[in-house]
Length: 173
Ligand SMILES: [Cu+2]
Image (cartoon, rainbow, N blue to C red; front, side, top):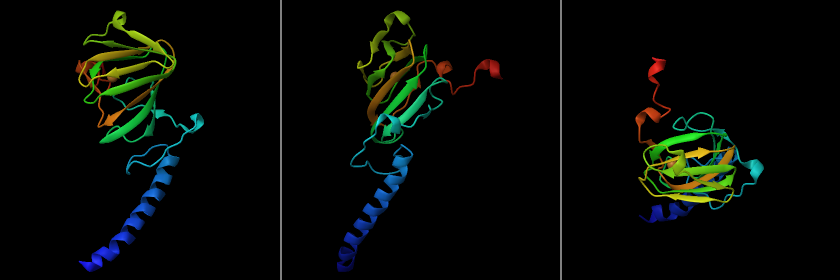
């Protein structure tokens, strides 16, 4: 296997070139979906690209994935921009969730039933840690940006399936 030893450095270099070119390409799109974690990310505020949030969240939210891919194994960081009066009904996550309030006014309450009185509100700089599998709900009082970081694969599972925006409402039949 002498030949393969000589070939290996060339392949490694090729892989490094290919992945850095690919990373340059995806970082232009503001997302790192298909490739290994980059060594470094530096984003100024105006380089953060917002897109409509996935349909697991109620309509009106926007998402910016800063690092990683929440659907895959490994660390990720994303931001959610939520409109005033937004509500996310009780749900759990299969992974721990760290939430930092970037701007606005955001609140999380614990429990399997939405209860405004149980919400703990936080403004810019506030922080929450939600343990794996603990039911909670969320709301905003004004347009709010939160940053969520964890290690994927992340998901959002509604306590009551009828709260899941992906499930068609009975009246739409
Ligand atoms: Cu949550």
